[in-house]
Length: 356
Picture 1 (cartoon, rainbow, N blue to C red):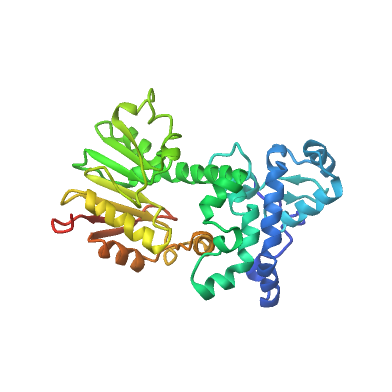
Picture 2: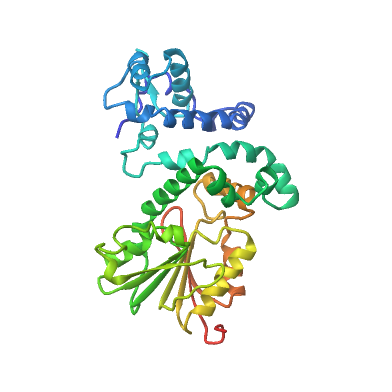
């Protein structure tokens, strides 16, 4: 891990919390500049070009084919928030945060940084006041169609970034979820809306007697984790089920996992939970895993809550709102525990009277 030189220009800046309120507010309202700076650095592949030794502006400019003076200005802006560090001799080097923007760093946030700063976001954020006033998303107002239709029909590059960001997020949390879940007595599991199936694959690797199914849209399961597809190491114990959980859950199992998909509009959330309950046998276990806005250690979750309001009319839940949705669907919530610093798991069972 690279540490920031306490004699560097960037280290001389006081941390944001030490600034007086007027300056702190200026920092906040100019946040778009910082987000744009991160995006520019990633798209120019500056974090990847900077190696283990400090580099001069001339060396970096040559490596990424840009003009030296604007590059220095960009890096100085980022160094003010500890993304890169500038030494007294004008050279720049990595910090812990700038390394997270490299493509080859374990746990890289490169794709997340791109997704959160995609072109459509700059169209949507200025309309947040309208979304707050009406309680609805603004995607249709901007693009004349719902967000995911726009993404896949009109913005293929953004769609690829979205898929990469979701894959990154899923991979990073899959091991934590697999380690967290206790599967005594569980023979079959279904990952509802599980994307490429990283959580399911981690569970199958951890429990050699377990069988599982991945339910997601046809185009998603077609690109499932190679371990789950024909010829993969886990394929004999995995079933890929193309479908839409908002319409039907055509699988019966001992355990249903619903991770980070109950963030759409409330009606979609209700339909998904109702479909799981309708498919499950009495006594089946349903585990919902979500980021919570009232149990978050970071403002990232509350920002994502507003992001969801803008693009799909969705929300990040509080503990009470998630329990309310699950109870309304007929589930008996038995336990709520943190999976890691970002996720909470809601354990529940399907009562004998819930199935229709």
